[in-house]
Image (tube, rainbow, N blue to C red; front, side, top):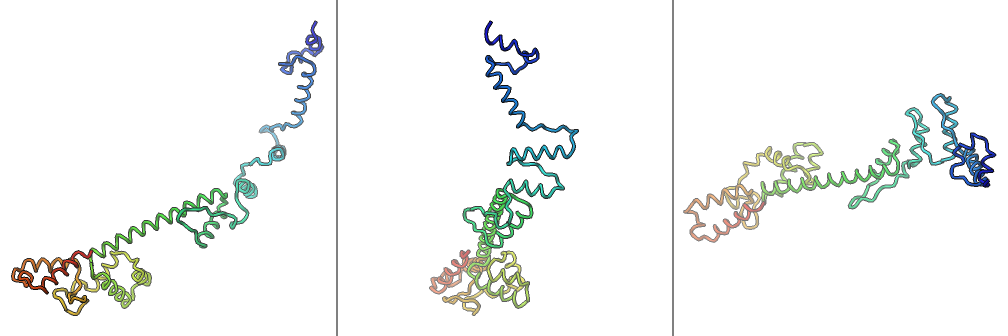
Length: 274
């Protein structure tokens, strides 16, 4: 009779059929398994059933936290302390000033923006990671809006040049003067002075001034003349005068008059000033 049969035969019947003997061929290995399982049982934590008391469940949670310090318990809505603890473990700083701003290409956060974003994040209980995402998205939106404003201003500038041509600066000054004299809203005056007013606002104010009545039919009329004696005209009016000269075959221009030809070229320049 082998040693394996001898020592296994001495075991109780219920042990002989136990999984404890699976893969075991010596008594030493058998007792090592017994001791290992005993040690494991001493370290294990039993999960309480639904019938357990609140105290028993709390004890179970505390045991888990002792064994696994990084364990995160999902807080209930009415437990502020548990919420703060959970958020702290996830990365929420104790103070708003501890939120670090992300690096965003082509953008620098000013002091007001930084303070405002940090205050929002702190009140909302954001983690450091969430704050970086928030601040980055904020910066991207500001950059996008700035680009849209620049594009809009460029379009407005082109519209004014097309409408007013070489008279743009002079008319702009008159619009500002008119706005001040008529006590226009302060924000509108500031927008005009900084040249950030919309083209539609400029044209509307200029129309209130009776812009269409200005004299523009002859050179040297004393109103906005350039150094050559020809009044500055809008592209529209310059084109009208060019058409009149071309249609009038008796005009000195068609007879080779140098001054008339010079004036005609000036009109062409003003017509294409936009």
